[in-house]
Image (cartoon, rainbow over all chains, first blue to last red; front, top):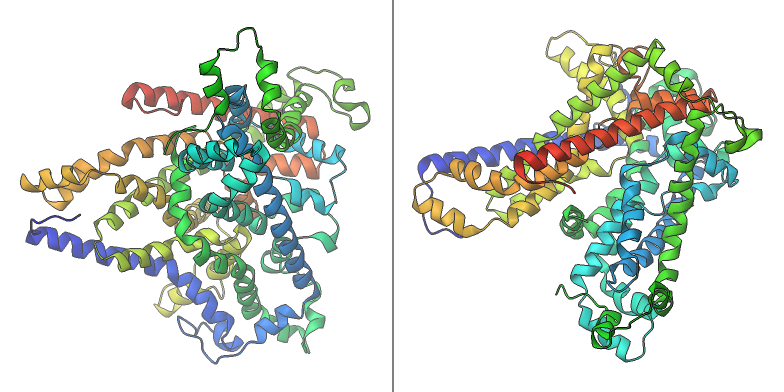
Length: 298
Length: 319
């Protein structure tokens, strides 16, 4: 607000209060994250005794070496990266081509087709009927299930379509059409390269979904070697089952494992959240735009 | 900028193609249908075929006989569910959990956005924003394990702090009474920053002339916030509220399922977790499909009702 009128004293007090409250909010949000990071590199005894509050006590990386020596954590990491890369690429491809087609006002049956897609936002078959379909397609216990499922979310579809409609100048497509470009060419050679922001948003939403979800894997996968990271995380962090961790490092006894459990868990949390947190600064400037588009109607 | 490309429409205007039916236009832009095909095929298979499969709620589904071959039993499963001892507790748990989290989660993003909007130092604003967005990127499994680690009765960080301050240790995870509070508070921690983005965007669209005029009339910052900013984000808030009402029966079952333990099950068993356990783990397909359908129908009804109500009261509605 570029106002020329000076704030009154009460206004200044109000603004100061806002700054302080926001600082406190940021602190409350950040503290648990910082604590996890500090605890993961601290001395296990200090962590167990509750001596770590903000800064690491007795720096060491044993928790991390332990986690990385676990075969299943690595398998989970590999699988999750696979689902993330292939899943997200397919999601973006399918969503983008579809959204482009429906962004064109001249596609016959546009209203009906849009309704066909948006309807899935409000009504679905439910857990069991969906499971039966996936099973009859032979996707149970197939890694393909985690790649394919969720390829189109109506919400992301609408975001993408709205972006193309509002941000890509129609004249550009018209010019390309006159130069002999087909609809395929328009979609992939003209509109796609100009859709950076919305692709970033789709990548974020779909990627986050693939990396962080565990329920589809719980439902559709039984084979251990295909499980994503989140399943192993649940096993270790929540169910306290350390399938191969006992054997991994030089853990002489049960006591030694009990001593290491906490920092190992904190290290695992850091490692599991790392890929999404490094994506964050790259995609961050598109957040506002993406969420904004999503708020527009239909 | 909002001109939408449609060569066909332009052509149509010049020479109205009389007598040319839909097939003519569809054939001319067949490539667009090819582009749309993957989306339609995907949604058809994974969303519409399951909708067709909902009818097993009215049948006794036997996998070998298929959907159509299974005997029709009408409302049997619904009657069974409504008269089952779990029914009332499931319904109450689901509604309480989602209603309370809706009501608690709703105001915080608005407050955060209103406060951020008062900050004129861009760097400070960006700093607070970036920090509050961060928890959104953490997975449910990680969030729940952080809760378990922090709240553990013996060596959890919170209890260690309580003990250091001379208080008694509290069994946060073992008492059903704490379940909803933990669920909602952690939800606020994780979601407030992210949800505030949309309100910030709405606030950036507020006409500065309104503020200038109010300032000249001697309005304080609080008055301007209340009489200008709040009304300006009210339509956005209404739309978001209606949309969350359409999800009233879908509590975040991923998180609930992970937070469940034998000690808090009396309040943490909700419809969706019950459907998963009974349906998939105990293989009662028809019965749980009926429950799922009941759930879904309530969602749609609530959505339509709230939408109607809001249309009457504030002329803001989803459709």
